[in-house]
Length: 85
Image (cartoon, rainbow, N blue to C red; front, side, top):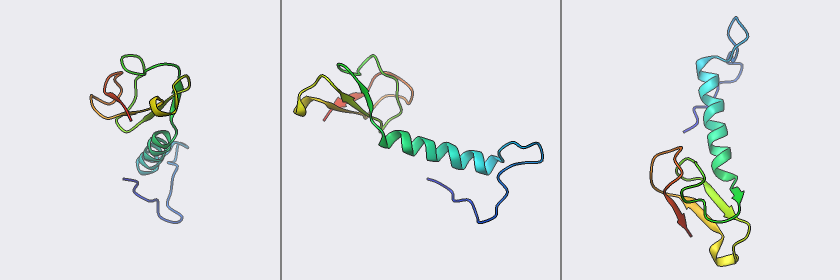
């Protein structure tokens, strides 16, 4: 869940680095964006493509009914758990 930043909330510390809250905000925003953007490749991603649960994968060589996979099981950042939808 994205914790919103308050209007005029400080996002950089005195050293010019992101504050912890701003860093968490942007990390979650990137994670959600990545989940909504499918990875593209050729062939099945099972045992080949590492991703977080919920990530989509589009097989660009597949026919319409055999092209979209969703990472549904396994640990995040592993290459197993892909299910053909």
